[in-house]
Length: 307
Image (cartoon, rainbow, N blue to C red; front, top):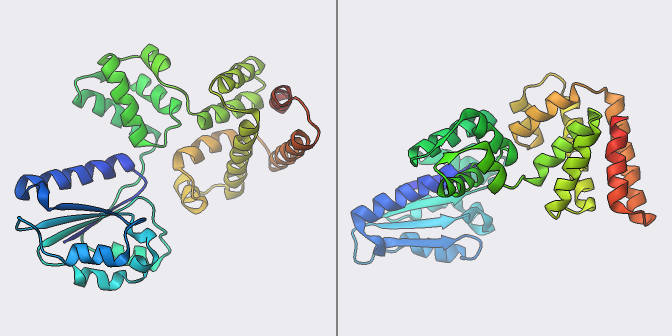
């Protein structure tokens, strides 16, 4: 039996692997579990593991993490299932796969193929409420949404870890405890910086910029993230009326990011967006060549967007 666990939702993927291992150990003991890292183990070593008989047990469980990173394994995978011993169960954990590759297509044909996709912001907020309840705590829907926004809403495993932190502090999670214990993810704040700048909200721009600097984010990093955000806005603008899921799939970004960008990009024309991209490029060149004071220059650029 070969099970494939893949997809960007690390929380669910990790939980499923834990369930498989726990059930196997309960039935056959922990002496028959072997783990190999595909980035370190050779193809021959992985074959040896799945072909050999279990030691002091009637079955064996072999867990291969990212075996596809081994070029020989990926290229020879069509022959791999036939090499697995009848007394061996195999779990292939592939966090990231190229869906255009023949390796991915071969994996998808297996009956044990399981792909776990990321939740959108609403799904993450629901997960936060369910997780808190299942662990003896509470969190309101509005606080759950606030938490997801603060974490940029893309990583369920990060959200779960932060919920564990909040629940250990107080089983009743509030806006105050989220504000006290959870740091903003810089990418989320840069998007908020853009929103505030385009809206002409000078006070909020200054406040959010100060928060970024307090998080030890350098002005050059902020410029790089602004470039990334404007790039996403340009992609969304060019996509016109396509659905967020379609844009996200083709641009290889998270649907959550696309949805937030769509709301912002509706307020500007194509020429305005091109102008912002050109201005940021010229600004970046000046920062690197003229020795201007970076902090003052970045804030000036952001405030100028609103004008």
